[in-house]
Image (cartoon, rainbow, N blue to C red; front, side):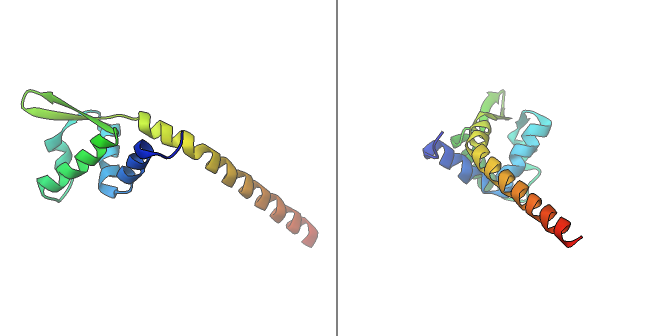
Length: 112
């Protein structure tokens, strides 16, 4: 995966603490009506709706109309794609930290 438009939208969506909290609420509580989600935030409804729009455009949530309510559901596939893209960086830093630990162990042994 390359960081193109879809991944860019996901990163932009994740940049907001409000949107990350919405994703956490959906992860922990399952699909929820927009009114329940909005109740967790002290902001005007249009502002909250804008956050939901960004999440929909990044395909991190889906919306389904059930009667008068709109239910939002977490869509985790884009997060998996981002995780796959980030994995080589995680491996890079893990190797660097392992090297640092080995160096510090060697230094400690030399001072004993």
